[in-house]
Image 1 (tube, one colour):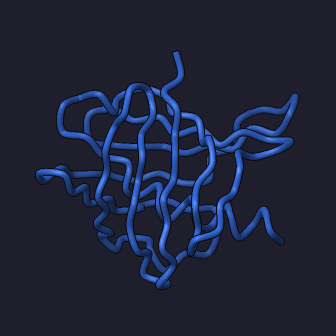
Image 2: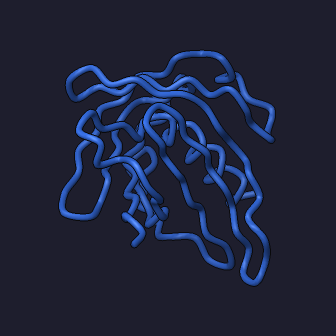
Length: 132
């Protein structure tokens, strides 16, 4: 249940992973976050990865030794330090499908930090590490 809640929160906040300078393009690995003030480490037994192209994203979960399983996809736009992402696909029931969601972001070294308040009211700060 905890993994499902974290995956749902990640799916929602991952709508925020945006950067206007092109640095976002490529693969990012979930490294942990803070949810309503509670720190969570990275995932155990599976990885969450996001791949960004010019204006689209795709998120996959990879269980240890398994094949990637797509769980989310969509489009994103940049305006200053705000990114608006619109989820167009989700394997989980989602109230966010086709709903634009706005987040603030910053990149420090090879880490993407996403901060925002989800439509559910949850305060989140997530860390995604750039994959080589």
